[in-house]
Amino acid sequence: MPLTEPYDDHLPQEDPVAFDGAVGNPDDNVVTDTSAPSDPATGDGPATEPEPILPEPVRQRIVTLTAAVLPTLPTDEVPVPLRRVAKFAPNRRARLGAPVIAAQLTADPLFRQRVTARVLADAGDLGAAVVEGTAPAAADPVEVAALAYLARPRGWRELIDASGAAVRAEADSAVVAELVREAEQRATRAEHDRAVARVEAEKLRDELARVREELGQLREESRQLARTLRETQARERKATELLATERGRAARASADVDAELRRARARLAEAEAAAGVARASAKEARSVDDARLWLLLETIGQAAVGLRRELALDPVDKLPADFVADAFAEQPGTAPAGPAARARDTDDPARLDQLLALPRAHLVVDGYNVTKRGFGEMSLEQQRKRLITGLGGIAAQTGDEVTVVFDGAERMHGLPPAPRGVRVLFSRKGETADELIRRLVRAEPAGRPVVVVSSDREVADGVRRHGAYPLGADSLLRRLARS
Image (cartoon, rainbow, N blue to C red; front, side, top):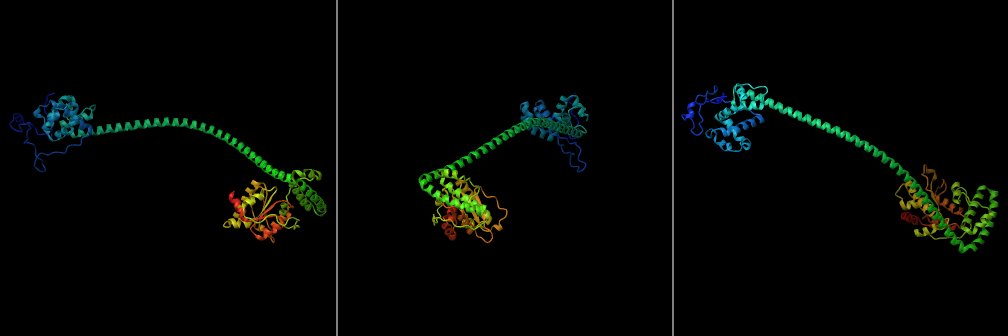
């Protein structure tokens, strides 16, 4: 292809005489075109259009083509700012000199024309097609746009716009392809993760089933161990209680066996006489006498075994306080003979522990007298519940018979069950808890230790006359606080 200057609608035609130095700058042979058409609107100079905005791939290709032909240009045809760039290595020329090259191509049409002549010569048929204003369909749109920008044939802006659209379409296609590829990768990873999750879920289900089975076995073993522990504790508690009782009985029997035996024979004769009268009077009286006699024989211990076998007296199912509870304090009794007093008033909880340690002791508590003194800020229901719960603990610890008495049975409904070993009584209308307590004390046989807890002086004096041990409410409250 001949190295002819392509047509440029914005570049003034070069005067052949200028190259001989007739007109122009002697340093760079740039020819000043004095025949360029003036702007029809103003008539002041040549009409110019703004430079198009080039896609980045096109701009880079233009810079690369220009950088490649810079060393081939004579030094006097290379603009001064680019002469140093022309000496760079090929891989640095386009990278470091890109801003200067682009600025010179825009500002210096003659330099662009000289570069274009060499670029079109290297482009061959594609360059000729671009000069004619056409581009092969199979040509690279970036290459076509770069050649069109440099050659600037008629319609070169349309070629750049078309190439830009093609570049953007390719970029969009590449983005879409990348998005599709990423979506496929995510779908593949999701499917893999789903398969892994299914496998893990199956493993977790198997592990859960195994853990549940082991948990069921452990629960069953725990229930068996708890049941065995409760049985063992119950047996131990019972054995401890029996051992304490037997030790007390043996010590007392070994010291007083002779004297107690004589008193037992005398009391036995009185009991036989009373039993004959009781048989004739009523079945209930006989039951009371049998209960008294049975309790009396229990206090004798091993020394009275032969007498009980001789009299063929079986153990009774009820205690004296049970008969008072059944009658609700409606059957008055007679006060048995006995010592005038067996203890003195005290609020020492240690004294209460000593009395409760006596064999077959019976603890009688004046309910409201104790609760109003210890926790009167609570409601009556809460007072009763707290006291009964504490007495249940004492009954469980000592094994003694415990009776708590409250006033006003007609107002009590839906009471919770009392703890094991605790009897809860309420006085009926027309009778006070103090009277019911004295009746309970009179029902006990002589010789049995009865402890009455009340801070009421009248109650204390009354039960003391019948041989009971009166103690203040503070002694029980301290005992409960200690528990």
